[in-house]
Length: 275
Ligand SMILES: [Zn+2]
Image (cartoon, rainbow, N blue to C red; front, side):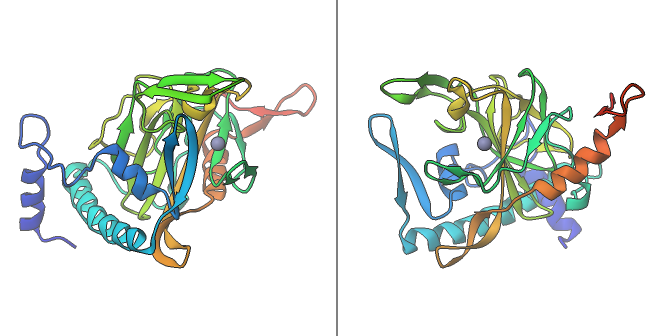
């Protein structure tokens, strides 16, 4: 528990627009946050556009863990100072559903991909533009917009001309949840995601809209939100790195609470209730 004096000091240090600027040390550049967010391997793009996953050294992993814990301490202070009485931290059982309609939530956390298991969930919708929402209150620690790139069926595969949070994520944001100590990555959103690094958001607040940027620009990808959730754990023998955790049970709980299926009179079919 922070003392009132510390809280006031923190509030002064992180005053909103017009006040002192947020120090860079609290929010490193998006590229560094993405490197900290990945666990044992790091995505690199040494040859043209083909992605390579390069294992991090033990030294790199150890220093990343120390850096993360220090940043988390400052993000918690930042959250406490900005959230005030209006934004409460969110226990997992009260997590909100990550999109503004029922959609189709897949439990595809363990599905194999070319480079390993998916380790995230996808929520599909009919049409893009559906609001993406923060499951829990937190601090936006990285946000990238203006993704320019695409997919070519032959030849280069995914190409990238800049913008966004990363080539694969496209227009994306990472939210740190001070309650669980976990992180949400929202990927493939439309341009104009609407949140910036340093934003403090409540559970259920919009952080963007479903789009098809990054890896989801490929033909046939379908309109979906790719959402990854990570918590500190042990991976490649190093305690404290961020490891993917399947958030399906919490999202399913939220879905049934917010968008329950109701029986229709006609054939006893169950359809999504209109909220
Ligand atoms: Zn996905």
